[in-house]
Length: 315
Length: 310
Picture 1: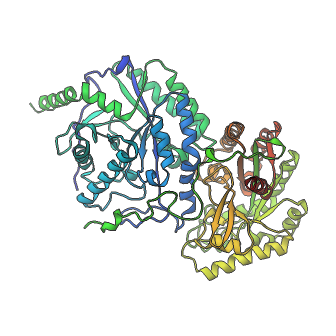
Picture 2: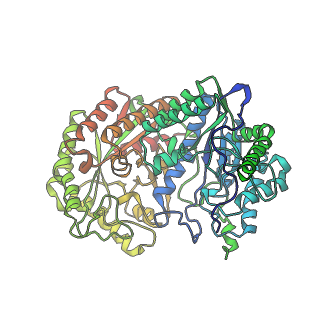
Picture 3: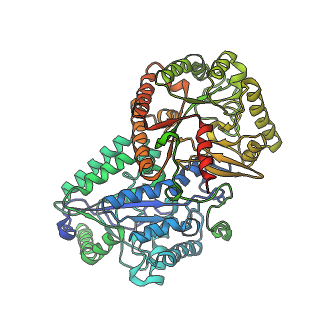
């Protein structure tokens, strides 16, 4: 085990070279619905227990199924209304279990990225070759079902190994060259994209996803009242919008339809989307587009800036 | 040391579900349902009448909001009993004030232990459904099937004897059940249950040789979850229910009938400082004439009758 994963160097949030998003936008705003499948009776994992109840785990399984049977369509209606193309974090087994959902995403022009096979199959305990095979399966499945060259990764159930990002980048290159496997949602160290060091040397980016704005963290872990979630979302946006006048920021709302699409929570989600998209200088975009734009315009300059600062401090 | 390769095998990765309990479909793609009187929204107002024994065994887990202190946990025992002595009567008064129709989910042991309350509820004529034996007799995977079969038979049969009602519905204590529970329910002529919270409409459920229906009784919106699990205020609970009502009403107008299934507990909302929020919710829901507030079984009957249309 390492003390530090070594993906990025320290880079303070002041005096950075400014980011300018397309059309002078201050905030790159993206919505990342997690479309997941949790198995009723997953195999045991030595490091993490999937369900708190014996099989069948009716409470946990059935509310997640609510997201698939009821919630995604609701969320899609809402995102359509506000002109938001989402970036889907997909348990790719949904392509097999519920292909209609994947088709609805594909037909909307939404981005699909990998969230593993099932959200009940963890990375913990996998060998490097096993993890590579799992990641490859996920990226090939997305390509087979949507034609998309998967660009991003959020590890299943946010379970990682020391090699997760390296493997994702490598499999992306094997399958799609530079057109796939170039950003991660797994790191929460910044409000702007940052270059990530992977062992192949591939140009690779962390795109700010968010735990703090993630509906499941907010509702199920922190047990926040729906109306306070709206306050949090507005405050988060307001500050990023203000700071984005100097250098572009990223705001992400990661969602789960079994949380945000419950009837008592739809109103506040809608109000948040209306508020955010009602601002003029917002780039409503996708994870892939943020990563591509950053790679095209800022990745190399930022890498140099970070190196210069490291060298400056060392000298 | 790494995991066996079968950790990456997925025998149930196929169309539909990884089980055979019910069929896959999305709510918005199903045929429109119309409730009686042309109302967009059906309201199942479920009052859970429960007994939490002092000598809780906690098998296979301690039921949420049961005993938590060393024996004898008098604080939690008596505070839950408060619901059956005081809270329920406050709630009945509120329901009647707004002309609301409740359905009572009763632990059979309450009907046995508290004949006054049982008779009071029976005389009202509202539908009663079986909520298991008590809150410490959970149904769970790994339970001895013979033991569970006898438990279901006792809970359902005894409640029928004590109430004189047909008892068509079931709600498992803590909404957990074993792989065999649906079959045991069907064998005891139970027609529907509320444990699965995966929909906003009823749907058919395979119970081995028999068939059940699920009427999903929302957990996320119930008083117990919002107040005791999420630690939100009763003010927030009322707001969340109003928001849910508004949203489902709108969706029902656009897409066809929806079910608002609201579960409440006399030991919670029956408290003096909370009852007014139940009253506010009842007033809000009943005032516009948009709701068909019916016994749960009648909601299912209406749904089933429309399923059988050609």
